[in-house]
Image (cartoon, rainbow, N blue to C red; front, side, top):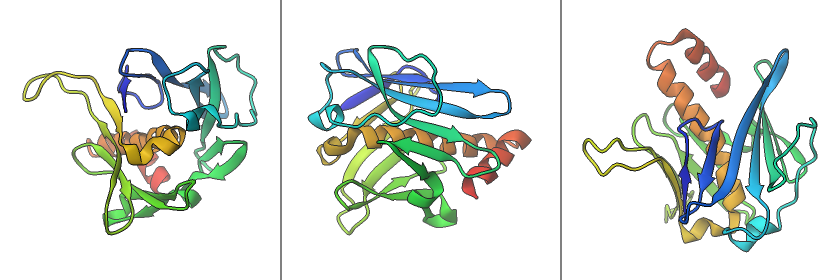
Length: 207
């Protein structure tokens, strides 16, 4: 499965399927004195996604922003600057750093347990694209987020999320965790450019 990103910002983008239909919408609201809230919505049935997505439970909403009637909210991320970042997914409030542990060299990568009890790792490289794989000896590839190409060295294409058969049972979860880890990667990249604001954000995300 391939989902094409219409924008490079993980907090503001739409994911399209192979036929150009909108599958997921990711939007972020900024409110004074309140944490940014990223909403991840999935197109209501009929839609092009596997049956796992259709049976997901819509989370309880803490805010009452008007939603696109064609999409159902599946998750919401509250990017808190003092307290840990929170995820609301399938009706449960989750502290992201507790369920997506920092591991690997310099704690760059993130590990989580899937709905099948299997451990997965999002590889967040200093260069290159994000990779999700099974955390065992097989290192089975589950998904990868490929950045956009301007066509200088390779064929021109937009950024896209590629999900392998091993991940089709948890498409929603892959999309949600991708938003989180891609934002970490982008923040790290900006921090490497000596942006003081981005560096502070990166240190906060890594804490």
